[in-house]
Length: 396
Image (cartoon, rainbow, N blue to C red; front, side):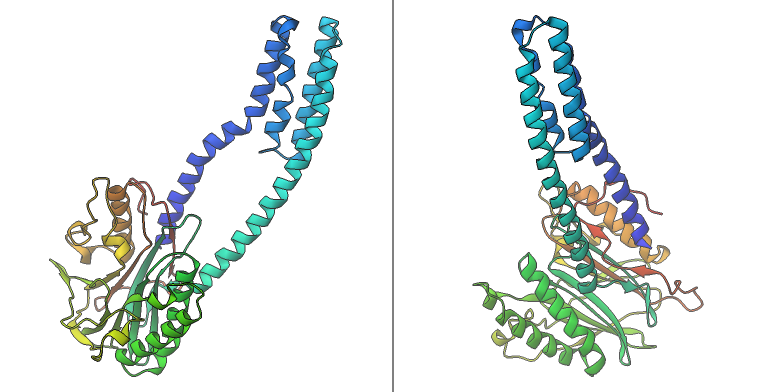
């Protein structure tokens, strides 16, 4: 699945980042050798050896405690060698300084390693929590194939304020994609509240309007518990879709969200509803009922749902990403995985690998009759993180 694509550029990026890091790990050794050579090569009046305590101090910021102590001993032996070579007791004062600095550096290294272990544990817990909040979507839900992509703008995060979900119900396959106003943990909490409500309401409610009312109520209740000053101004755009079992249509209810794209064999069509509803959390400002509209959705066609983080991603020239214009001409010949990979790489080339906002994509296709089904074990999910992969990332 698409996870193979994103994992390939993650590994590649780690290797590129590891090279300068590995060179930095050798800097204490290089500093020790440089000072030692200068100390032996210059007259003793220059007292270059007094700089040697800097080596174990530097090592404590990146080495283990044992490595820092060993380097301190090497520096100490170097100073003692200078004292013997020049028959000068002066370097002995430097030896005392090296001993003191090495002891302090070893303790500092011990504290640093403890904090790093704690940080790794916290990140592991956060990673599991994020996977629970935005759980992976199967490669096939009911009668439709699905592929997803999530790119979080926040560093070291897998999810943010964007959300999506797909549920197979007795009424058909029901889909949700949306974007919470704002960023940070409060936006993640709102997204979790909305998706959690959708997972239950999608099975219970007879139509999309009832689901939207449930989502609205859940959003308002959760926002009321937030301590933020602007919790009363928090809202989320959302798009609800329903693909009936055996039907050739898709029902849409748009709550202030960018319109989805219907990718047909020879063209692309934006499914603009004639009467869009306000975003979730702002229903009190709209006295009219939400409406569901029906659009044709034939086998072999693809429905592409996305958040504004995709179409509002700016390039180096400040131009927004033209999603509809950059899609392949014959999307029916592309698997959903290849389609999402194409958008991922093209978005990276457009933005230079940087995102200012979270971005999510949800591609849904009704397969042609007789077409082999996606392997039931295949998964798709929140597989992307900021920054974007390089534009030449392979598509496997």
